[in-house]
Length: 126
Image 1 (cartoon, one colour):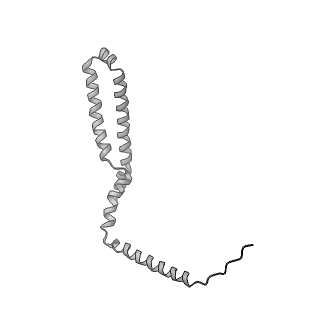
Image 2: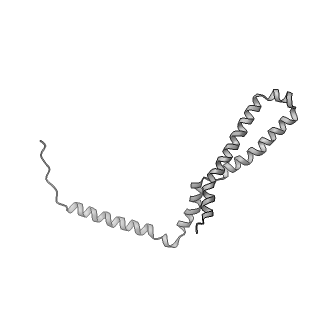
Image 3: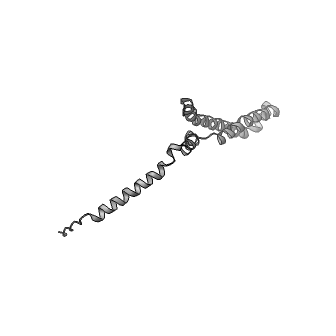
């Protein structure tokens, strides 16, 4: 059974992905900014503090990248959850084949009706 909590967590996956993207954007801007001003920062702050800051950015970015790669979107998560439920449902196994049989019978009936319908004479062009 699909609980409200499951629906909530499925819909929140996109928000977590957006947080990961935001962290990566901020980390990328920080790395780019520091790379431009690296000689100046090393002179002012010292080499050790600059490298500690780079390590912090890397330690924050790696989990964000991994989460971004692993977390499905809400649509993907819904498909992951629902498709096995539908495919493994015993009551739904015969629906597809029965539905196709009904469509074929209806199609054949319409074809017969159209082939037996009296043809209307064409109107002469004016």
